Amino acid sequence: MLTLAPREDLWIEVPSELVAEENGREFVGVLSTNGFKLVMRGRPLGELPPDLLDAFQMSLIPISQDRRINQSASERAKH
Image (tube, one colour):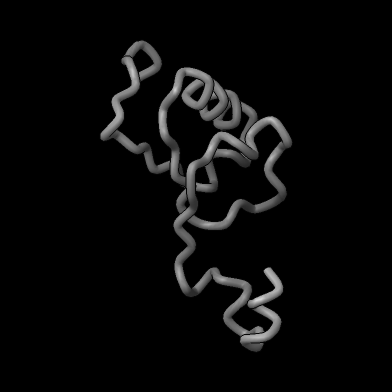
């Protein structure tokens, strides 16, 4: 995969568990640097390293993992 050229119509879904490991973070960093569009699936176990903050174009958070679910509408509007 690291030898492929990125395509405008291709988005790669990355499980959040992958960035919990050093090898996974390195892999994501290389994909991002090479121009692939990445989507994180799920909430990461901890904070993302600063160098990976811009690696993901978006994230997909299952409703069961959404920490805002118990917040009021006014609290959600602050974020």
